Length: 121
Length: 137
Image (cartoon, rainbow over all chains, first blue to last red; front, side):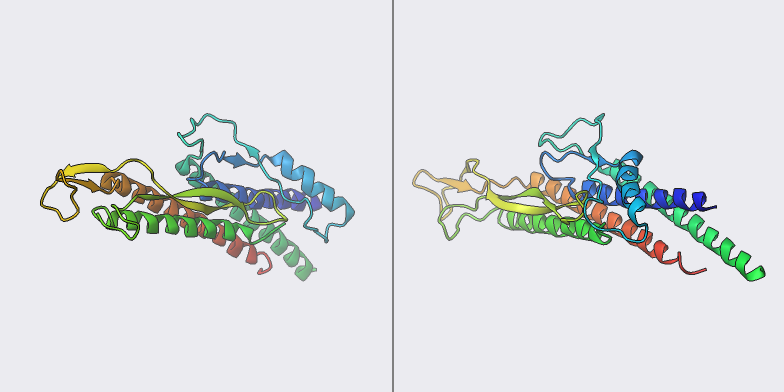
């Protein structure tokens, strides 16, 4: 029962971190020599799980942000060294947002289930 | 984790692209200005972007800012126009080094980048609004 919660939590957290990295890519579409970044699931797990073992309620700010790895390039960089493909980044961000919203919806359905269980007993 | 830093990332992009539009608008407005306060025709300007770290707590967030506004040092074109008051003794007139077609393309690109950042901002906002529904059952 609590396993279902923690998987969903991780999914939602990862989507949240990824949205920050994708927003940074979109913001830097015209910055010379900027390389597009992305977050892998393992990275977020590594930092977030470390914090969870000490005290799940207390999220300190230090070191909890995944900087993201450079996306391995199929994209040819532009002449100024920038390799951000705007259409792809916007599509990924939209997909990520829907993923996040699906995760949150599932989480709230789970909470609702528990609440119903408590009510009927 | 910096919860609202993602909004500052998008906002920095909106601000930077707007400054770029201002510079492009100046270039277009002065495409035919043969007199300036420094003497000589108008010299084209351009912006240089650089990344700007939005949050010290979250290394993943990088916004953008205008590093500097530089003058384009490519040489002026000359046009034969002896009737013009600013023409030299041979009748040649130095005109600004602004290429209107190029400026229009830059303007379209700045506008596209601006729209993409607005989309990114709205997506982040919808994600946060969805989170508020967690407590509401």
